[in-house]
Image (tube, rainbow, N blue to C red; front, side):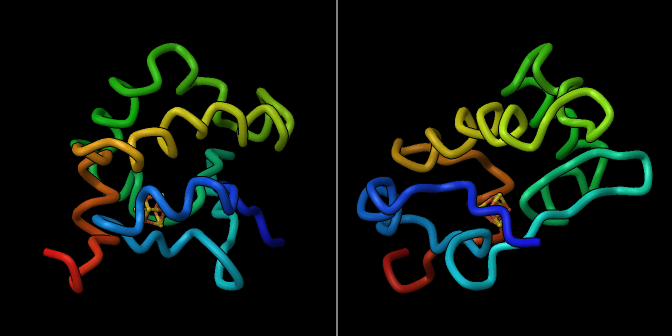
Amino acid sequence: MVFLFISNGVKNHFMQKLSPKCYGKNAQTFIEVNGFVSPCCWLVSTNKRADLLKKLLGNKFDKLYITESSMDEIKQIYKKLENTWKTDQPFSTCLEECRNNKNV
Ligand code: SF4
């Protein structure tokens, strides 16, 4: 299943710092065994990263389970993550895993 989280309009803004691997033809949806949905395996790969995502998304984090929300609703929740890509401080896990090395 392909689950594209970002729109073409955003691409131009984030490419300076990031090359998101969750974008384009390789985009995928990850559903953990507990039902947690994410655009990649890195966002909750450690407790620290999960805590950072919880801090960013607040009480919406608990809605990221397939049993709690529709895929469209989950996609909307991840917009907040996507919006960090347009800033000077993209979400730290995204910067660690998908940094655009050409412009560092
Ligand atoms: S770390 Fe961030 S930018 Fe990279 S694939 Fe995951 S969600 Fe996308």
